Length: 312
Image (cartoon, rainbow, N blue to C red; front, side, top):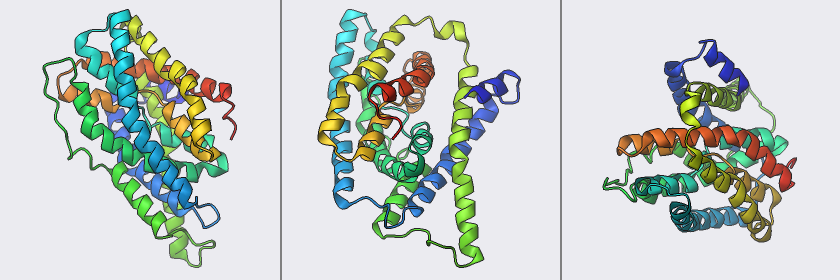
């Protein structure tokens, strides 16, 4: 992150470069990383059926329960710190949906060590449910409290990340993976190319986060004190309160770790896309995403340390 921040400040990176580099990561390196991670799973690493079922159930329960929880939390905040009615929907959206792909995949790959590939596979399955929820009730939720009509967009549902998640699940279902030892030059090249391109994702993603943080005027961002309250609840209070549920109901340590780390992710950048598209308060959304992302530099390792999830 620091390298990205510095590169932007010395004008090696700029917003135009960031935009193209973001597309490169989201549409090329990250999808390849997901597929490469699944292909690396040999029979000894593959999870059992019960683990996959648990992941599916946990994902469904999370994206059904969190909107209800978010609704009540935002309503309480609206009364206590006087959140604007027109921002309530955005708050709910940002409460539920975290940056599980753009930041989640690289962080899991790095944090889980030799289990990183399996962790990314779990996250790819979770990403399917994220997209299903976000592009259905998620974007409708954003318009709550406003007169704007926010419609479901199935077109945006089909993304390279979503496609690669489905491809990864299909590869897993049919038991397709790299051979234990590449027998010819073609297999070596395929493994080398996919692995090298996929491995670009974590460093590029972190560089982009740092560069994005450097592109926003600091004085204007930190004037919204109510955002701090929201971020504190979202990224510290809720993880502490909900952590026991992960321990009680999910007995696979890696799976519970993946779900918890994904839960710790800052606000999804998709919230800003929705705000821009449907004429919501995009300026407020960008501030919240910035502060949330900046805070995650501290809150993610802090929560992992407090819950003794790290190292795995």
